[in-house]
Length: 450
Ligand SMILES: *Cc1c(COP(=O)(O)O)cnc(C)c1O
Image 1 (cartoon, rainbow, N blue to C red):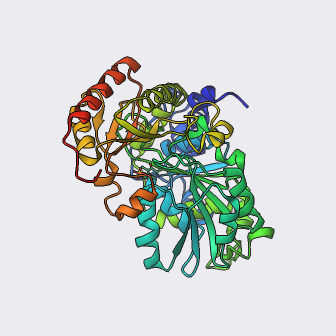
Image 2 (image 1 turned 135 degrees about the horizontal axis):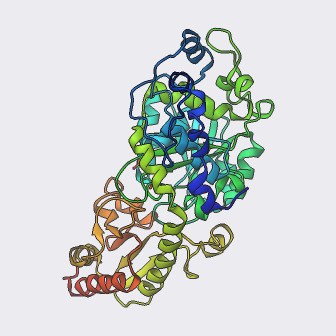
């Protein structure tokens, strides 16, 4: 297999150039003997659907899922980015959807049904936590949470007969309390269950969860994969290792005959049954279809993924070290610092860089945090991460506002906590800007109870 940087610019492109997997057969015939020019960039098929060139093509699509017909069930531009991401994650196939939230939702709905349960790490992105606490319960799907995600025995104890999915983030947003991925995968597999990993903050450049036993990987492609803060996207990647003999009884929808008595998903797709079910039955019905233009922009963003993430991680480590020594700063939660409880796991799972999204907590509580945010000029105040530009957010008054103060504290969010997403700017400019923020924070009028 070629290296990561080679794959990020070549994977998923050539098959597309070879005629979009056979879908343009008719066009090629019509223009023969003149050869169609081959665009080097991935063409954007900005179309709702595709002509059936021959009568049989229509039936072939609806019967056996062959070729392209309507963009909600597939589009060549989207296929190209799916193949590229699958190649980078070491997965067998991928499904691209409209947002990270859609990726988490369809991945879970492909595995759990009413009466069943999701077991998740307590340290989770707020959107996912809300989905598990408010939306899925209305469909009869409940969630259990593991407080100490680093402890495999805690996962083991929390599994119930109804559990169908174990879910965690490879680098939790934004506390950086890393789970022991391989150990949790072992627990899941001992029960025949699937481990779903949100790999948004790590990206496949820093960590490939499938290599450590994950069955399904999801991403918010809106973050590092797109990289430039211009579009939303999400992706579900599958390892292709679904074992009908070992797990079929737990996932009857994958092994039962189709509604019309045809072959089951597992018979038709083998190890890829999970992803095939999400592609055929979940995503096109719930409908979080991405625009082909957004798929193109994510695919283009990925072409520089390794360069951006290596730089952002290296800069983030320098920034975290710098912050840790500042008198205005009470603590820094970055797994790349040897003071972090996750440092040993970071060395094992993230040897090439520990990401660029982390929190730090100012002395002086919310007034200090506000003064910091209002003083910085290079770092942008907004709710996003993974952009080429550095960003800052105050979780206690924004992303975590729906949590009680006790819940906030348990997830490492205090009144003086700020989340940083480090971009590709020059380190001296960032440090000068943070200096501006810190000196303003130190002049803020302190609260009665910090
Ligand atoms: C942003 C994010 C999501 C949601 O992704 P969207 O593209 O915003 O829908 C899910 N998981 C994590 C870890 C995220 O950071």
